[in-house]
Length: 414
Image (cartoon, rainbow, N blue to C red):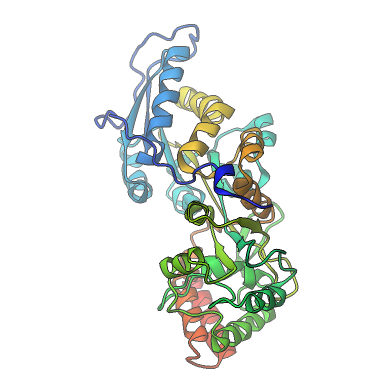
């Protein structure tokens, strides 16, 4: 799939910040005109961030017009929403609905601040990975609206054909005669487990095993299995060869790819617009396997949660399912933020005119939800620093990996 600047929709478009009502948190059942829907009344409060503010303002206006239910939009910094939600919902001062990321679920469910949302037959209208991501212990806790994952961005002028596997990618990269055969941004101290995870899964080393319902099983830590040790050895080899370099940060990797210094760049859709704007002809390819099995990236899914303490759950559910979950709103959220829609109909419409979204979506179909269980916090604590040490050659890779797995297991068992 060859893409030129003319053929791509702009990713990362900044949604116009609207003048939102910043006052009022807890919802109530205040009487109000319920229009043609007598079963709805009162108001709901929705926490939203700046990137989604304009779209939700329009959706809220439509909802009020149709149901008579007033919607108070409260703008928050996205990174602050989870903790404030946990703190305020039990006091009755939180919102009815809040935007958020699926990997918050473990914390939200454990604190009892979110309520299940019954998608019913509508569950089939969303991409399965999105529904899976918003599921916890067999229940769905929100309406997803966007899916995000990484893939391989290829400069088609430097590498006309997609690689068949990792070794083929490196061979094609060297044949291109560029400064770098392949680029991925890493942190000097913490590497980047998120970006390196597809290579890890290709060795058969997921973080956790799964239950019968597909949810992650915190009692089945898989990261330290034989595949994980093979991955650790591979990391050390790639570090020694200079292919993986902790001095090449995300920004440097992006700059070098845009400058034509590498034919391949492992990244997300957020960096595609800059490459296209620079005049590069790019394609989005599956992530090549390094260990022989499928290279599965993490899928990050965003959506809207329902408060367990909402005093107007009927109206909040209606807003979530039939407004946030509508093709019109999901398409508008995609156009504002560039993330592939979770609603299948909206996604299919988007990819007709946007090969970049189509490419990332095809890779995302093979992605796995980032674990949302609370135990994942222990993994993050040790994972990246161990990868960085291995890439730098700071010790025996298998011994370092074994220690990391033991440290994670110890932290989980406490």
